[in-house]
Amino acid sequence: MDITAFSEVFDTLDREIWLITARAGDRQSGLIATYVSKASLVATHPRVTVGLAKHHFTHELIQESGAFCMHLIDEDHIDWVWYFGIPSGRDVDKLSGLTTNTSVTGSPILGGALAWLDCRVEAQMDTGDRTVYLAQVLDARMVQSAPPLTFKRVLELAPPDKLQQLRLGMEHDIEVDRNAILEWRRQQADS
Image 1: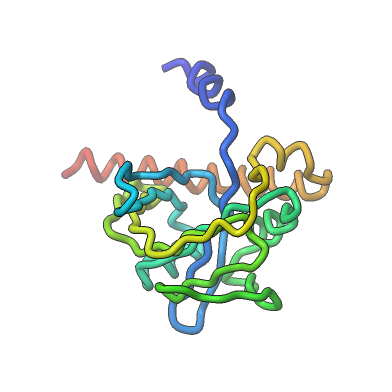
Image 2 (image 1 turned 30 degrees about the vertical axis):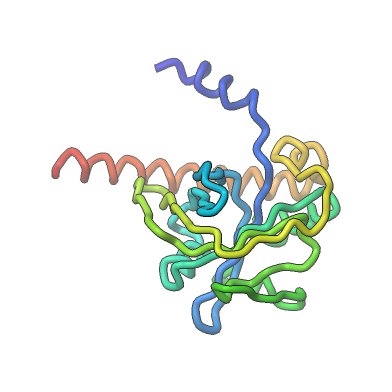
């Protein structure tokens, strides 16, 4: 396997940044995601897929509630990347002090996002390190029109201290994910 070629293929892409929120009972949180895709061509039955690492608190809330809200954000909200992408929701209420609303699922909807999609999980697939959710979009709003924030743009705009925090977090996540993938593959081979 040519790891360099694999990396080069995906380095040509620039994924948009999504903020995913969820609530289960009185607990709520959010995280930053880039593994998001439209999953239906049928406009009257909109669906998305989202892949989230299983060790995140927001994943736990989605597992309990079966719902989440996706927010497409712009450069004006790059601070949300640090706020939702660096600390753990187990340690801090990431939505404290922010204005939120709800729609069909009760998942927090943040004011200021370019757009939001309120989703209910229809199916899920365990991949060891992640859960890939297939979700029905129950409500959606395009709030404003502007270019979405992308992963490469975050890296360009990040102050050095935030960039270092992001890199350390990614290094940690890579190690956690590597171990989860290897364990999952061992279990698959044994079954």
